[in-house]
Image 1 (tube, one colour):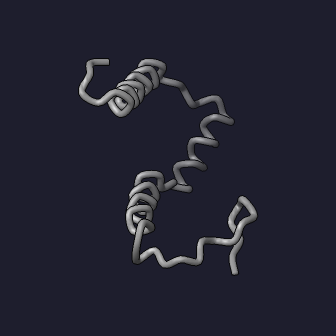
Image 2 (tube, one colour):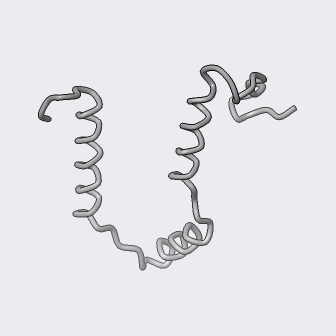
Amino acid sequence: MTVNKTGHEPDQTSKESGPNLGKSDAEHKIAQECSLDPAKIVEVHRRIESGEYTVNARRIAGKLFDLESQLCILDQPGTEC
């Protein structure tokens, strides 16, 4: 038996049937999109520690704007945000 970080036992129902099928697909997609590259993490950490890492404020602002636009569309479909 495995225990997840919340301390609860994992769901014992099959992910092959019922409402869990969609959840499994969503979890799979999220896992693919959120995969972490350990080598990149180490490199970025090294650059931060050495003072070589620079922040591109314009890029961050653009990504925040895009995210806000997506959230607005999800919150109020069919309207201009």
